[in-house]
Amino acid sequence: KAGVTQTPRYLIKTRGQQVTLSCSPISGHRSVSWYQQTPGQGLQFLFEYFSETQRNKGNFPGRFSGRQFSNSRSEMNVSTLELGDSALYLCASSFEPGQGTFSSTEAFFGQGTRLTVV
Amino acid sequence: GQSLEQPSEVTAVEGAIVQINCTYQTSGFYGLSWYQQHDGGAPTFLSYNGLDGLEETGRFSSFLSRSDSYGYLLLQELQMKDSASYFCAVRDYTGGFKTIFGAGTRLFVKA
Image 1 (tube, rainbow over the protein chains, first blue to last red):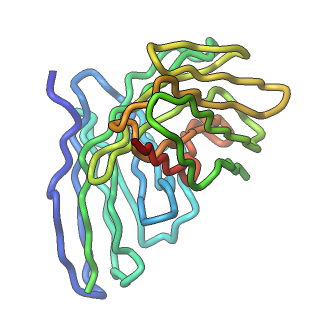
Image 2 (image 1 turned 45 degrees about the vertical axis):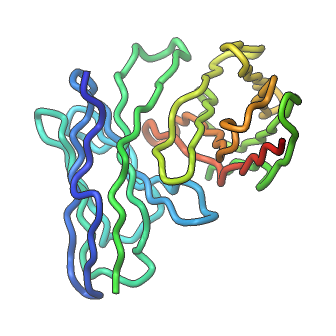
């Protein structure tokens, strides 16, 4: 079974530009989450999508947006790039278990997109 | 809001046992997970605790106390390949489901 695929793997952009990152989840997974990872900062939550609906959003400016398509693939967009947006952007997919049972929501991560803003 | 605290670094010798603690604050706690990430790699799932108690998976065990908002990851018979970053992550349902990660604990295993 194919894993989570993120494209592109590496990207260099100039300040002020915009960028779109793509994530294809594991087949059958309907939940996709996005994270920003910078050295020493752990994984900062960006958003979580389930069945094309954004379920939650982290504390990031409105320049960060995302969406999920009917086939569960997801994209995130960053507009007006700043130097501080340089980071590894990780996507994770999970199969959504029944609610109310405290059951595991194991997330499977892609290899990430390394974005460098110059 | 939500917050998680875990030590930034831990060093141990090969063959030893190490415990990585995690305390959390959240209003909509659902469960606690642990992930391992090697340099240059993606985080990979290690374990999950939804209810109080100990979960064991091979050399790794994880514990949760919901009343204390506390959990830990226990790694036994440490191997050099266990050198990595370990993240605790809270599954929270405040305002909609999300998983929040701690800043990570860097584990160094020495020979």
